Image (cartoon, rainbow, N blue to C red):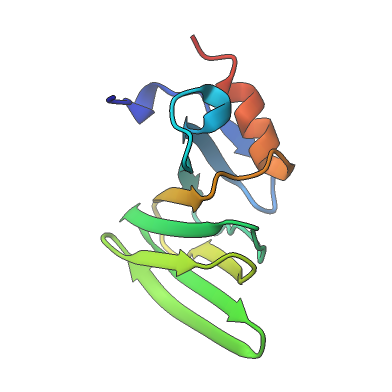
Length: 132
C-alpha cells in the first residue's frame, strides 16, 4: 500500500493548540489494523498542549524545529528537536510538542495500539472517513 498524505483531508484543531491532523492509517479506515498513523502539522508558536494517551506514541520530526516535553511522574525531560528526531512517549506519559520555529513543525505520529476514538482524533477520523 502507498498513501500520498498530501491528498488526505485534514482536521484543523482550533487555537490555542492550532495544528492540522490527517489520519493516514487506522483500523476504522480499514487500511491497517495494528496502529494509528497521523500526519501532524503544528503552526509556528503553537503546541499540542500537555496530554497523554493509552497507546505508545512514536513521533518522527519531518521538518521544522521545536521542543519536546516528556513528563513521567517527577521526571521532566525537555529537549530541542528538529528534522530527523524521533520521540517516544510511552502510554500514560504526559507529553507535548511545541513549535519554536518560524516554519510549520511537521510530524508523523504512530500510535500502538491504535488510538481510541475520542477528542481531536475523533474529529480527524470523522473528516478522514468522508474521503473517497
